[in-house]
Image 1 (cartoon, rainbow, N blue to C red):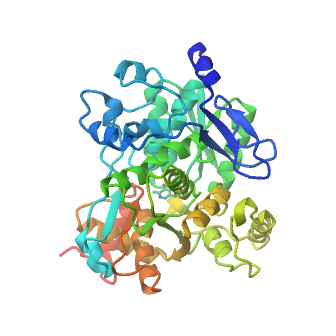
Image 2 (cartoon, rainbow, N blue to C red):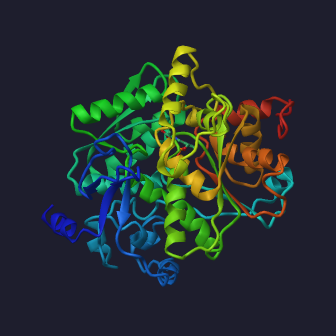
Length: 453
Ligand code: F0G
């Protein structure tokens, strides 16, 4: 702790409210997830990193026995250095940085998948799909969980807390077990994939079943964290966002830091959208990239809050970041409308069955900065997307199929072009074994391969 306090004195990293009119600042040791006016926070770095680091990141791929070089997150540690460490020494790093022996992000990079390209009708050299399901807990969450739990450790937290549609709880449980701290997970009863629930049990997390959906679970977990001294590790935590920046970092590094035209994500709570936006804003500001890729967020058509608001489908107003002045009243009226009409988010892709995306404000900022687009896809389109990824020898879950389905839809609308370079993020691995079994049992499905009798 004393060492951390000294580091904090150096003050190279701090927290700042995202609202430009408010802009309240907090020290890096703060555990606030909001400023006192209720706005979300960013981690800000005073130092501008040298572009020579690109070479360092590449060299660290030869890990020389250092697990923090092996880690696909901590390999980029200089760009998320809220701990303010400056050492290549494994033992010194391990005093501060949380890692599952370097496994987080280690296997993640973009791949060309020709069968998916054929299905989409896109140039196969230009289509890159990046599986994040090969992370140790089976989803992209590990990228941000290592940074959030690192901060939890920095502030001496004894218990981490999250609400989850499943993957966050698996990741939080895994790192909590590894660090020997407690973990409470709030899940919407009966609405998460069995494989995800079993992971949380397996890792010794305390499960709290909430009658309601993810939005209700998040509300309860945030209240309980505040009242019972828990450290929240959902993506409203700005340190989660820092780790998830490494998803686009790895994609860009693989493309020699030449920006693709598009980066595509499924949209749930919008942590990914926010972190990709922050990563691109920083890289652009530092002069590391010259072109800004456009972000496309793909909602399920049964959980389409962002799409409805962004595309002006509610009260005919297109919700925008608007240079830091988004119409938050429009968002509130939309939520009231959902409540009044008893409209609950509904999709078989339970990972993204979310009605109130906690990071909507940062998500809007990301979309404005990147001239992004938002659309929706159906459950059956997501299943086709998931299945064609499988035919390339890669496994992903249904929500991840939204990235593939979204590319198809946007190509059909002429928004993504055949020759564009596109990176689609496959956010998680299959944890609901019956989804592919059911899909392939129905001969009507596009890629179905029904069993022979
Ligand atoms: N894909 C998968 C596989 C997810 O688990 C999630 C979110 C998303 C996409 C959406 O990402 O929130 O950054 O927009 N899962 C969370 C959870 C909510 O609790 O595991 P987002």
